[in-house]
Amino acid sequence: MSRGGWVWFPMPGADSRPHARIMPRLALWGGLGAATLALSTLGTFARTHALMINASPSLPYWAIWLERGAAPRRGDIVLFDPPASPLLVKHFGEQPQPFGKRVSGLPGDRIATRDRTFFVNGKAVATAKTHSRLGEPLALGPTGTVPPGCYFVTTAHKDGFDSRYAAIGWICRTRILGTGRPIL
Image 1 (cartoon, rainbow, N blue to C red):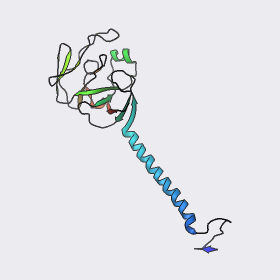
Image 2: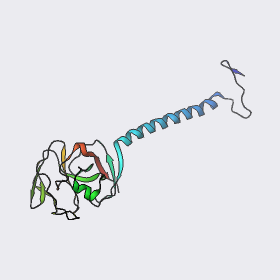
Image 3: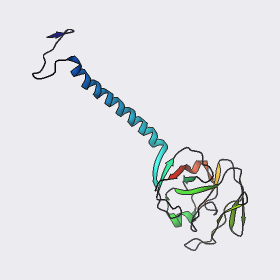
Image 4: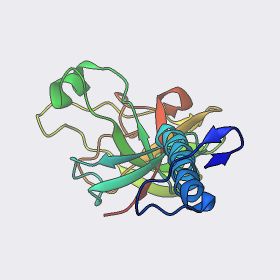
């Protein structure tokens, strides 16, 4: 049988209608196209999101959904790379995991301290300990106006290592991995 210059010999038992051969091919190509699009979208999603597992008791969640690039707001959880310091190395090792804390102070907010209690715009947010759990003295963190692009972060946990302490201080945009949403 001749079709468009080609000689076609149908297989015994095969459907001889042309669309019977074209439809599976279209479905295959459509499926491959959809899979390619899905993988591309997934790749973009993976660059902007991550699942973070919390190994610290300073936040009451063990799984946090990270969104990279989102501007932190007051009350948001931010995940960040802590600044290097001897105190940090002693407690968390040479390469500590990212920290997760709540944003208490935004750029332009006023941070003050009285009797080791920190205030953001006059509202008490956290109290600093005098010594770490390993006995080292803890210097108080920064006070004054939170600089542009930086944040004052805290946690309600009594042993939370956050902006209350000089070893952590302001958390600026370059250290922030993203904002987190607790999922578990």
